[in-house]
Length: 362
Ligand code: MRU
Image (cartoon, rainbow, N blue to C red; front, side):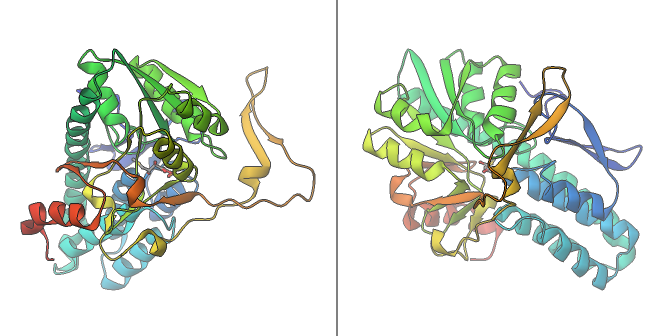
């Protein structure tokens, strides 16, 4: 399915020596690639959400740091550029993880070697992300197959597809695998106010892949679940605590509560890079608060095809805009990872950690 570079969110142009990303703020109406050719352009792309989704934020930051080192590979610039990238968005654990991966690799080296080694590492992280997400797809497919439905109705929230990673996605990877295996699937896509990643990105992705889907308002999801029109929920995670609590796009928690009340499985799909072993529980996860303008207005195409912003609320209205929420581990039926499927609890995550402990210090 992802055999060509067509369906990917970030590519490296080895001739122009620049990174190109899909500008996700323009989707679903315009598919435009844009060049990231300076450290400032990388920071801007992440903070304005031209690129978004925890794994893709991490990979983009890795290339951003490599780009900064081509300009100045001193210790001071390594620290400065890394700090600037880290400050772009606070919640996704992959951002710090990716910056640490590059820093560990280049810090011991002579400055003259740092830029090329950083680029090689960023390219390797990109490849690794593709492999990991495909494994998440294969592991998640086992769970979906076990539900044994003629047509499987899956609900997802936000966008955890290939636009949020490099290819495949996390929550959408098992769905793409199921579709490719000939399973009949239908996806309920919750619109995901206020940035509408469900409407703008997930529905667009699924439609391109030929997976049947229906966009629903965020507020209708509880009732759809209660009416048994949903067989399971799958979402991604921006940061996973060591006890299995997951932090994902705001609105995730309500879906998990509704799933528990109707006794349907609520799965969370994530690469290991979203696990923050220093967060004992979801309480410690920093939640990004974004500009109230995102809630008070909305953007889209008008009848003549031009893009415009519309005010929704009365002048002087105030809004609160937390971008993420925490779902406690006990509401999660399983964590679907590249290493297998695990119980969402400290023990489950320790089991994952012990499987991979040869790769990192405990
Ligand atoms: O604010 P966003 O669009 O970056 O939020 C993205 C999400 O919440 C995704 O569900 C999450 O990153 C998991 S991704 C594969």
